[in-house]
Length: 314
Image (tube, rainbow, N blue to C red; front, side, top):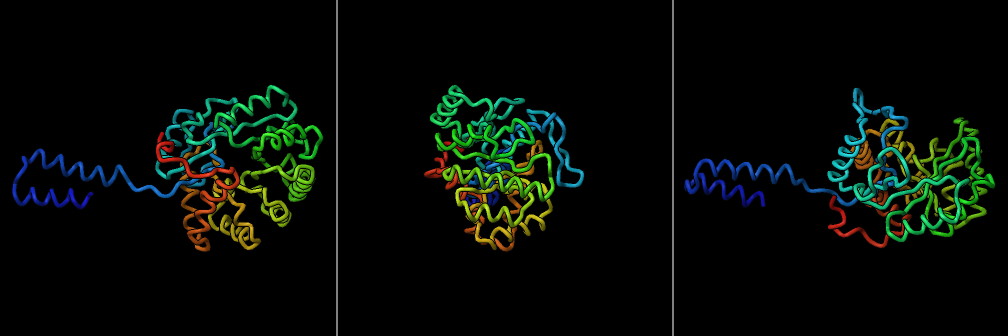
């Protein structure tokens, strides 16, 4: 198309068929086609899209030196939408109560709902079923009632049972008040006990379940329905550290359980930065990158096919 326009411009210059003003308009149109309609890449599923302001209204850290994070809700939403369009991303946005969350329709994917297991009742299950049936919900989340409450605490059971009954996966942040390796290992041991009781439970370990450890890899290996999204593995550390973690996951034969996630609140540019980091990984072939960007998440969420082009337009 651009070549045909260029040939027409040349013919105008040679034959003087158009007025100078109209010629300028035609040249400007050619530039608009080249700049305003770049070719977008294949569809990407972002399992950890932050469409909410940073917690407490604080600015989130930006990996770039001197990078400025957006803080007003409207600015965050506007810049996030721009990133989604530019990189052809479908993101899972929150549908729980919060401070002006981006609607799931604007995030271009059904959302996720965080639940407090102490407050799950028949009305909660009815709401979850209705959201799921209407296509607004694809993922549940845990709103942990207390930081010290273990995953295998009996009071957590309502969430695990609900997720299994309605056949929805759960996005799970690992880690409590104890951020030590011993604390992380204890959390994984509790998770193993949960999975033993609920072998059909599908889990997305958010932020790559940092820190990456042999115990975590063992959980993934023993439970193929447990995935992780790269989240802060890619957005919260330098590129070489992320590549080190990804190599460890691939060397363990667990590449099919890795999903893309941007996962940086109040910094919409993290979407593109995270995508670029995965794309530039020298040890990933095109098929592995496609699995991380789309195929693994589609399988995890049990999506039958990619959305039709019309449904990807904001």
